Length: 194
Image (cartoon, rainbow, N blue to C red; front, side, top):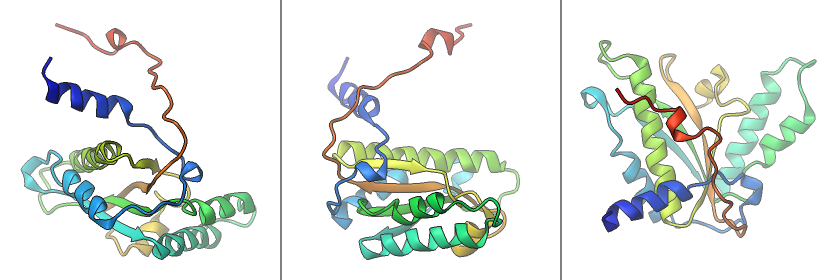
C-alpha cells in the first residue's frame, strides 16, 4: 500500500473519543481550530448546499457556553425531572477543554435535497474536523447530551426551525494515553458482496 493511504489509515484508526474531564486545560492555537474547520469544509455535499455550520467558543467563552447550556437545562426541565448532578455536569463539562464548537445543519433552499442528506453531509464535515484534530494531536469529544437536540438550544443559537443541531464538540489536549480501538462486530458481518 502507498504511504498516503497508510497515513490516512493511521489517523482514522487512531481517532478516539476523549471525554472533556480527561482533557488537561491546555489551549489550542486558534489557527489550528481554523485548519480543522477548513478540513470540515471539504465534506461531500449534494447540490453544493454546504449545510454545515459551526459556532466556536474559545477560552473564557467556553465557560460562558457551559453556563448557558446548564441554565437551558434548568429552565427547560420539569422540576420533577431536574437533576442537580446533570446541571453540574453541563456546567463543568468544558472546564478542561480549550474550545467548544456547536455543529449544526443549516437547511438549504433546495427542497429536492432531503434533510437526511444535509444531516449526512454535516456529519461528514464533523468527522473531517475530528480526524484533523487527531492528526494534530488534539483530543476530541462529540457530545449529544444535555440540551443539544432540544428546541431551546436552537433558540439560544438563533437557528431556524428547519436547522438541526448535530452535537457539541469539545476540543483540548489530554495527558492520558490513547486507548486501543475495538470493533465489536467483525467487518465481514457488516458487508455483503454481490
